[in-house]
Length: 139
Length: 119
Image (tube, rainbow over all chains, first blue to last red; front, side, top):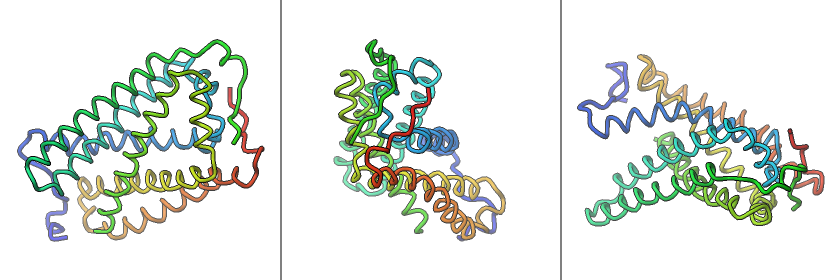
């Protein structure tokens, strides 16, 4: 509120990782607005979740651009979210040992989830029968 | 301050879902039966209601993110931040309601939830 006189909000100066992080939040955020909201509409509105079956994915992933779309969404969302978690930990965890432990955990989890997601998207090879008919999951 | 707190809470909620989602998509590698069993869980009534929270969180976080960028880069952004917060809430609700309808409606029409697959 006190910064109104300058007209602009606070912007980081000095370079380094925190400045990069600040810009990364904003740049990846703008991309994610489109990637995530379009993804939500495709998977929950135009197709019901019950129909996002293995067969649905098999058809969809015939097109490599959907794999690229999903991989971009995975990568940007994971880095944006985990970087957010890092900021939250920095804010609330005062003890140095705990902070180091938790931040290391965040780093390892980021790598593990990135690898799991990437491997799933890249290596998915549907069983032949999945391409024959569309099917929804009953509940 | 409320906008900040909501941004943080919705961000963490979406991150939690993302981690669960990466694991459930990982079930693809185990074949159709395993994966579809996971998807069946997502189409149950209780999980549909929970996913309303996800949709509301994504929408708020996205629109408030635009507000934050405007505060940072638009010379008059800080001056209008209060009005922009009201606009964010209104747009979030306006986008949420129709999406929520599509997510929740199948609960009340068992068997007909299946929207045709676009192929």
